[in-house]
Each structure stands twice: as structure tokens, then as C-alpha cells.
Amino acid sequence: MSNLFRLFLQALSIVTLQLSLSACDTWMYSSLSPSTATDAISSQPQSNQALADWNYNELEHALPIYEAAALNPWGSLPMEIKLKPGDRNRAILILRNHLRTIGDLKADDDNELILYDHQLVKAVKHFQARNGLYPDGIIGPATISALNITPAERLRQIQVNLQRWAKLSNTLGERYIMVNVPEYRMYLVDHGQTVLSMKAVVGKPERPTPELTSTMTRLVLNPYWNVPKTIAEKDIVPKVIHNPDYLDDMHIKIFDQQEDDAIEMSPDEVDWEEAATDGFRYHFRQDPGNDNALGRVKFEFQNSLDIYMHDTPAKNLFDLPKRAFSSGCIRLEKPFELVSYLMQDDPKWSEEMMQAILDTGRTSYIKIPHPTKVIITYVTVWSDTDGNLQFRDDLYGWDTNLTE
Image 1 (spheres, rainbow, N blue to C red):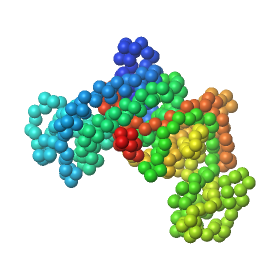
Image 2 (cartoon, rainbow, N blue to C red):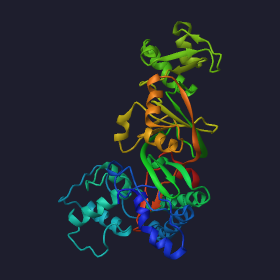
Image 3 (cartoon, rainbow, N blue to C red):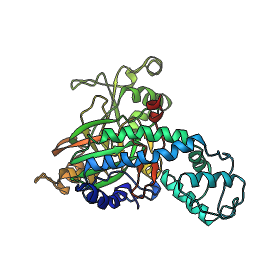
């Protein structure tokens, strides 16, 4: 399986036989590393209720394993070791016990206990895939960190995500765009079919992307970027002080306010040292263009936090497995595929029309024919159809907060 969308396909026959449902929407991702996941996934239609309930039940069935392990915890591996196939090390005794407990290694494995042999390598790759790590079988810092998470911590993580799946049971609809923040991924599901899947860049821990539900109503081609105050003060003002040509280089202008009747100002009118210490009292706006932080398209949905999805000129970030680099908004890997799908029911719309608008360089606001639900969620545990739990990092510490 290359993606959780595909993983849920196998559950379709089970759900249909047991519940006579039309099958589950499959929106999560794969048991493979994010770097090898396939973006375009096709799936059979499945009921949203069944998707959430099925995951809830699978996580609930895993609780006894981790409850028992919490009473007799597996040991920790030394962070300084690095193991590759063929190595011998007494720490492998701890590794074997751990992977047997959680099912990655067969319980009847009787190979040389301190040898990192073929069967154990296979088990480690399975563990890595379930934890969003590159499944290379090399035991280094990232894999050791995941292995050293205690069973009590895993138990709490499962319990928190049971709550999240229960909530999602009443949230999903026939057509929706979903971003799962810890997964760094966006999905578009239409009548149970996963029609789009792409990588996403989400908020860094100090500027997190919030959970929310809204409705996407329009897109903006050649958008201006009205720079939020936090970014202006923390990011742009220091860059201007360091490089006086920064605003010209990045096509950023200064206005006395953000209103329509705002007056453009010269950089010479600003006391930059005062702005650095006392706050920036004006407004930055970046012109449309290839250097614009929003790229060439922005997707708008109403919310009080001014969160939106958009294109980006920083395409290289999508090559990284962990992509928490934004100030809260969501950057999309293939935004124009989303544009094409959202606009396909507009008889006046065409790729040629879109390109003509982009070529003008002027900002254009386009109404989406069918407003589409947007769900930004934070799920760090789910089950694939083989009964394997999938874990992802608690990027913002929200799992911990819910258990306190």
C-alpha cells in the first residue's frame, strides 16, 4: 500500500459485509515513508461514518496491548548507537523484545538474539513505515527516538486520537478538502472518491496551523500578500534592517494602513530601529508575481484566524519528509490541480482562461461553483487495514495537552 487512501480499500469488503454500507472515505496516508507515498490515489466510495467508526474501533482494540506493555515497559535503546544489517549488539535484545510486543516481529522468531539479521531488518522496516520514517532498516537517531517512546506514552496517544476519530464521525461530508497537519498532506474527497492528494507545508511549532472547519468559497489568482503583523515584526523588519534593498528585491510596499484607501509610504519614512523595538505600526503588502509568498493562487475559506491555502515559490520544501515551515497557513504542492477540480463545473472556465488571467499579472477573484467544506485536523494515530497502527509525531504537543 502506498497511501492510507489505498489502505482503506481493503476494508471496503469487510465494512460492506458487516454493515451493508457503501464503504468508507479513505483520506489518510500510507504505511510507507512520506517520501515514497503516491500522491494521486483512487479509492472506492466508502461512508464517512464507517471511516471514522472503523478507525475508532481499531484503536480501541489496540488498547489492551499497550495497557499490558505499560505495566511491563520495553527497554530504551542508547541514542548513540547506529545499527545496520549484519551488526551484533546486546541492545538488539531490547529491540527484539519491543518489536515482538507490538507485533512488528513474529513472536516465534528464534534467530541469534544479538544479530541484526534479515528477519529483524524486515521488522524494523515495518516499524519505520508505521511511524512515518524512511523504511531503510538503518537504526539511527530518528528510529531510536521513535522506538524509545514508552508504551504509556503510546497508550495516551491512542486514547487522545480515539477522541479525535469520534469527533470526525460527525464532521465529514460528501465533498470535502482535508488537511491532516501531522501528516503534512491534503486530500480532496468527492462523493467518497479520493480525487486529489498532495503534500502540504504546515505551520511551524511556534506558529501552528489550527484545527478548524470552514467552507472554501473562492480562489484568488495573482494574489497580493497582505503581510500579517507577526510576520512583519518578526521576519520582515529584521531583514530590512540587515538589507535596505530587501523590500525592493521582494516587491514589498509599505502602506500607512491595510484599508482600501491606504497611502503608500517610502521606506525612508519609517524609523526601522523603532519598528524593531516598539513594533511595526504600518502595513506591508507584496505585489503579485513569481516572488510572492503566496505563489500564483490563494484559496480562501472564512475563519477568524486568517488561515488559507496557497501556492508557494519554495517548491524545494516538498522534497522534505517533515514540512512544518509556514506561519500557520497551508502551502500546497500542486495547487493548480486543485484549481482545475474546483472549477470544472463552471462552463466558462478553461485552462486557457486561467493562463490568460495569470499572464496579465492582475489580481482576480474567482468564485468556486460549488463551495467545498474544509477540514483541518490533527490526527496522529490510525489503523491500516492490516490492523497495524500508524503513528506520527505530535508536532505541536497537542496530544500531550489533551491528556493533562
